[in-house]
Length: 260
Image 1: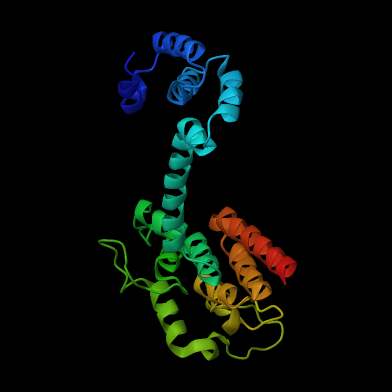
Image 2: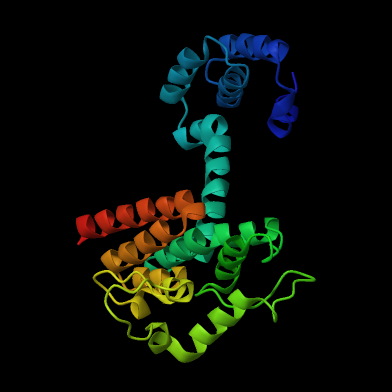
């Protein structure tokens, strides 16, 4: 039996070599090379006598490191290679606050980028509210008359003129002229009079996802929740979209409170 060939090419071990090695060890019990090869052969074939042969070899061989390397060395080398690849990924990955900021940006703006690719331009003549929501999503701020649909006559659209004048003159333009008590509101006044709650219309008109993301990075989770809740209530078409972001921010707030 050629032991040197088995040492150089252990992949050639099979049931035949196992029987030959067992017979050789029985004939020469102190032959360490044959005993080590027997243990390795039994390990590769998952032989039922592997444990017994390994226990005998552990007592008889002078260096157990060789025995361990023959049986478990391959697995350890594979694990080391996997850990090295994992360490390389960790070095390139952001850590700490950078990782948190990256996750927030990806959550807030990742869906918008995919949605912008899928959405088609809306014709303001047929669905003007849908057009405004699309422009707001693309611009990341308050709706403005930019990027109109191809062929749309925006210049002669009366609603466009109203919004342009509102953006130009600001909050003062939204205040209707004084009228006597009991007079009915005109259609223009109903359009231009905002629904002011506890906060002013001018402040809420600047609520955007970008502002919410800035508040998140500053750790002002309550303010970010307030902004997204306002957007959620005023954008029924995106109610599920904003509800998902609100749940995400609540989890961030709870986690931040727990870690502090």
